[in-house]
Image (cartoon, rainbow, N blue to C red; front, side, top):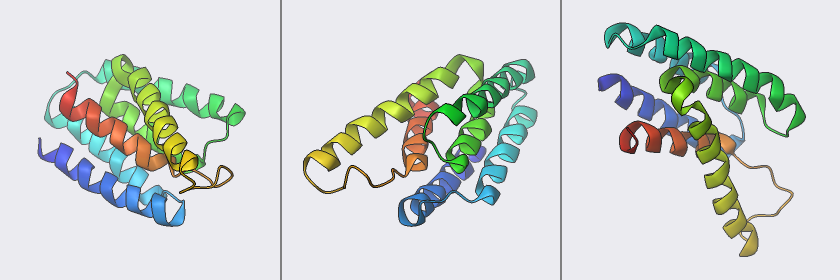
Length: 137
């Protein structure tokens, strides 16, 4: 459980950095990845599940070339794919895009944000992983 709270702390830092500077530092993504590996080792989770999740993250890396998503966001999804495994990987992707769509639509509708302004997608990925880890079994 302590690793989840460390992850949460990293995601808060990552979200702040992404919202303010529109960048996700590689150091944070690396820490998320290493924590995921520690999570598997310490809690004796399924290595097979994590590897399949990570492979889905790699596939997402290659498919992201066809959509407008930042490299830091893709690396974050790859690092988090170890945490969620293959079973919740698509839920992570869906929730991230869905939450982003809803929030961005509201912000654009009320002219709080310009439609041409980039989205800090790492923030929405962080919300999605939080929901998955703490509320979805």
